[in-house]
Length: 164
Image (spheres, rainbow, N blue to C red):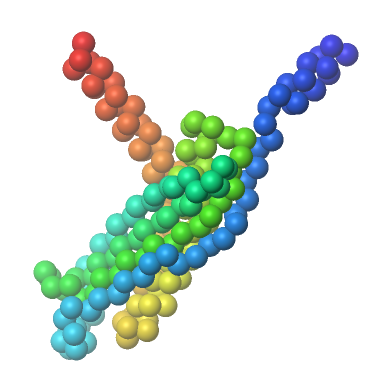
């Protein structure tokens, strides 16, 4: 009986965890073909480079904007065939989470939701630019977050050792 009362008291004290997607939108899109029509005279065997970045901004209490930026550069040797940058953003309500849990949700769950939208924008834009479809492979945001946390811990440890 006492255990049930303790459990009920603990539940009453803990804030309710909430996650809700409010809106997904295209924040910015840039597409460039610096070679112009010369690019279409070449045999299509480009080198593709992909860069990824996320940024989180607190908009209001428990409301966050997560901005996923994908930049894809396609080159023939050293010449850029096309460059596309997409900023896919979303508004998310996240309540009852703090610290590491909040960071993990904002850096893994939210980008996982945004990525398919960004990938579709890239593919559609590239094909409208008269290039072959460009389907980006899935990204493991959980692994990227874990690696970033591990690197931050190693840097903090190295700094502590250097200061000591």
